[in-house]
Amino acid sequence: MNCTRLSNPALLSKQSATALLKTINGPALGANAPKLACVGLHAQSIASRRDFSSSQRTQLKMFFPKPNAPNIKITKAAWAHPDYSEDQMKTVTVDHRQPRDFPDRVAFAMVRVMRFGLDIATGYSHDKMTERKYTIRNVFLESVAGVPGMVAGMLRHLNSMRRMKRDNGWIETLLEESYNERMHLLIFLQMAKPGWFMRLMVLGAQGVFFNAMFFSYLISPRTCHRFVGYLEEEAVLTYTREIEDLDAGKLPHWAKTQAPEIAVNYYQMPEGKRSMRDLLFYIRADESKHREVNHTLGNLKQDEDPNPYASEYKDDKPHPRKDLKWQKPQGWDREDCI
Image 1 (tube, rainbow, N blue to C red):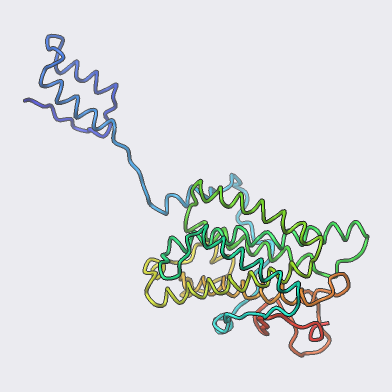
Image 2: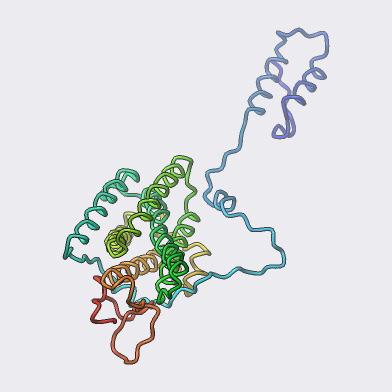
């Protein structure tokens, strides 16, 4: 059987292959001619060839396309991230505030229920976790974690305007917390592009959670802050386990991964401290601060007390701060900060 070899088969389409066959074989050859069969099969296999790339780099470039704004050099973060030292981040520990009254027990029970649902939705099993499973869990967790601060800040903003009263600094801290959680989400989206099923789960969870937080905050803001405090305890636990698994060699891909550029810019990560492990320490420190803030806000009088994280104190004693200088994992009592 005679077969004609093409000089550049990658450029051959179905139409050009048909025209070429007519030229090669001529009108005298029938449909069963050996040349036609051979070249036709070769052309068909070439035309059916598709180039698929599973490269993560290609997917990430398409996920966040650059805006068409040639005159803008950079758009900075709305809230500058507080400075964390490496030593401060390593002092963050897993902790738990024991429920002390009925609202606390309700908040803790709701977190346990939510944790159970999250484990099922993300396929969580600590002994079987991989980089991919952790990334899916982190994306799902952060897409929901940005809801409470936005809902609380929005309701307090509307309440302040409606009642024509000052909010005493709560709104900015709550919105900043929501912004920080969204930055976590954007960072993890640079590492994995979610599929349609994950997007559908996020859409459903966000819709349910937003409305639940909305009505719950109208009823009992204090319980909602306690709920978020307990939720952040789970987040600190999750990121602590990720760091431990990475150190134990169970996450070899992450051991070679560098932090995305968006994380480097947001946290102002220094040279030589931009690994995935360093990034997890930053994110865990953020979650520990949210844990402290919400437990503290849950200890205050919701309509009267000023926000201690937006206040300046007269003395130099330890007080609530945005950074990690003085940490209170279970929150500051009202007597310590008001």
